[in-house]
Image (cartoon, rainbow, N blue to C red):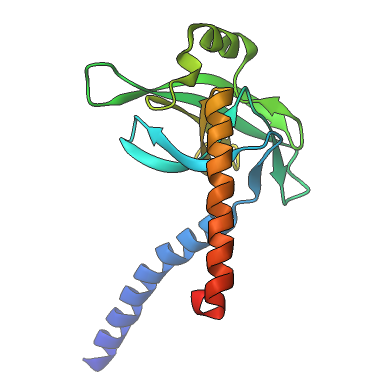
Length: 186
């Protein structure tokens, strides 16, 4: 009788621990990362699709990136660029795929194709920071199941300058606070 309970308890523990172990290993094995070649401002980006504000990188102009990989056996990675745009008159957003491409590791690429960038710059829709963001999705493998999303906002030069100054002021204030509080901050 006690043996049956012991076996049942052991099987239950095993069933609950295997998915947790698999999820932990899958999350920790992400080896592909995105590197910015243009200098961003770290900030919050409005995502109309999820209806949330997310941490992202904000740029002026059409930023350049390259994909880095910790594994020397990986030669390329798939990327997809989406435009998440607010739908006028409705309380939701839509996701439009702008580009899908395979890039070699350390190969430089632009966020947006030139024709899309130039058209958006010409009509001003590129800088609609409050109602639009871009999502750069980098895939870990060919299965299209393991990926990482990077949220990106694009603003005009004046707004970018203001945001850069604000970021520098926040960093200086945080550094002063850390010096004032010292070890108590940790």
